[in-house]
Image (tube, rainbow over all chains, first blue to last red; front, side, top):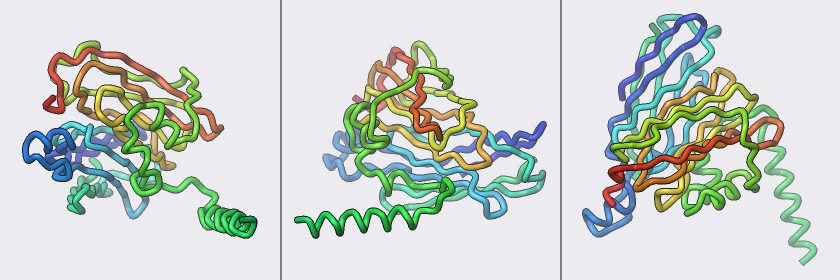
Length: 102
Length: 150
C-alpha cells in the first residue's frame, strides 16, 4: 500500500493506494462460476502515533487498486510522524503501508 | 413472554452501557452487516440509520456528468457539518453501499475516492450529523462503459 501525507497550513493531505483486485460477486460468477470467490477490501484503518485518524468500511464497489484521499487536522501531528494504513479483505487477507508526513 | 422481553431490554441496556459515551471508531461491516447486502439505497439507509429522511443540504459532492470508465469514477465529497459518519451509496450496482467513514476528531471530512458503477445511476452521499439528522447530496451520472463487467 502506498501512502503519501503532506502537512501544509495545519492540514495533512493524504493520498493512498491499496493494491487489490476488488472483485465483485458478479465478476467472479462470470469468471469462475462461484460468487463466493469475490474478494475485496472490507475495512481500512489509519493511525498516527497510535491515534486512529481514519476508519473506513468498504464494499466491492471501490475501484480496482483503489486510490483514496482524505484530510486531517494537522495541529496534533508534526512532519516526520508516520501515518500507518492497513486493510483487511473479505477472505481475511491483510495489507499495510506507511508514509512519513512531509 | 414477559420474562423474555425483560431479558431483552436488560441485555440491550447493558450493551448500550458498555459503549463509551464518546464517538468511537467502528467497523460498520461488523456492526451493521445488513447495510452491505441491501439492494436499494433506501434499504441500506434503513439498515444503517433506521430512517430514509434526508436533508438535502450541507454536503457537497463532485462527480463527472459522464463517466467514460465505470470501473473508476472519481467521487469527491465534503462537509463542514458536525458529523459522526459519512457514507457513499449508489443505485447502479446489485448492492447499494459503497463505503462508510467513521469520523475521528482529526477528520476534516473532505474525501476523494474512486468507485465502480455497472451502469448509469445516482450517487448519494449521506452525512450522519451529531444532531441526529441525515444530510445528503445526490448526483446522477451517465456511465458509458460499465465497471463491473456487466
